[in-house]
Image (tube, rainbow, N blue to C red; front, side, top):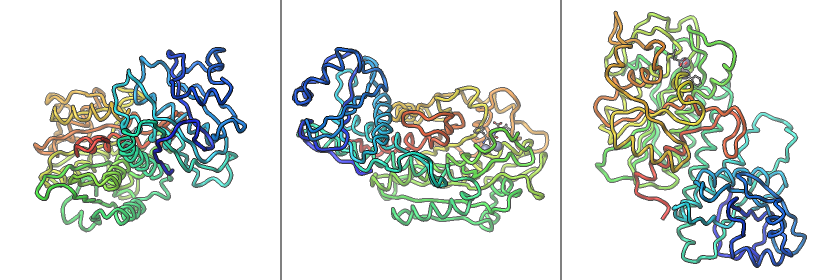
Length: 504
Ligand code: BES
Ligand code: ZN
Ligand code: ZN
């Protein structure tokens, strides 16, 4: 989708669909709409007074202008009450509008930048949210469908309109951030949507290579022999049951100051999690193709950072493997030695994410990082604790956690903190090794994070458990059904904030 900003009155805008957002508790249209409404013979006012358009969240009304103005159609979309307005409401409204526009078969749409006195966000930030909502609301994955009965067009262009010349530059900056973060999310969604027989570990490497080449990011792949030489017992142990060899991908995007310590992102990339010998039940097992969401998010975040040329030193790390129950698979009771020398008694082969992350985090800790962030579809316990709408967050550094709370609010990918107290480690004590890989029934999200904490050393670290949010059971305004690639925009927003380059 091509996004742009124009300084232009609504009445002169020629487009397929002009999207106008309206509040529920502000019954009059903004002044800027007056001229347009006059040309339409007062239709906008009438729809308000007769209650056909109430402005309720996500309500839509389509009007054909029949030559009265250059825009061929007008789509009214409700934002809900202005007193309750949030950036996420804006994303939702634009996501809903985006699907409607597509249904009309239109390819170009325009929308004035939403104004609000209640929402204390800059026009740049609002523009970013509008672009994200439109691009992500229109996301579809039709790669394997010959005919799906829907119109095949996608929206080609979105034009944001403003009357205020002084805002054009800021809106453009926000629009660029939105474009990059939404494109990164669509890219990550695609990776997770491809089935596991296609998106194998070697295919993930191919995709990472293509991205790295396009964006001039340095890419290194440690193959199985390298992993053996280094002693990555976690990654090797998980991959033993699979015919696919494990990969360890390192992406380096270094555009910060020369000696500045890097931000390191580590993403769980299990291209399919069958559970291994501790086999999962077959119900919903197909969803485990998305057990690579953490890795996809990290690829997406590096991609967006490079596209936006953020002045940062950033390293992305992806331990990539399948978790399968082959004849040589790791068995309950087996002991693995991880990259940092610690030994782990594997009591359940389905708790594999933490095993591969242990090597990823130990590798990250060696890079003298400014901070380490890992993101993973790690535990079913996260779903039990938080349901569908919050990402689990645990970590050892209050400042870093506060940064993620803030980025989560901005991105509408909100995190919720869980405790990480030493006492929880008791549940991981092993009789035969340094620790075991499961901690029993209570606090499963916490014991998983506790396990990870033993591999990061002392650097500031945050762990994000996205098992609750990586898969959407239904289509939502800007979340597609199935893989959501949640976390991509959270990471991108965190990086934007860190780089001190918000859309000013
Ligand atoms: N990938 C799963 C976690 C998961 C479950 C993600 C459902 C998304 C939806 C993870 O590898 C796993 O199987 N965890 C186990 C750990 C347990 C054996 C300690 C779990 O949570 O059941
Ligand atoms: Zn598992
Ligand atoms: Zn898993």
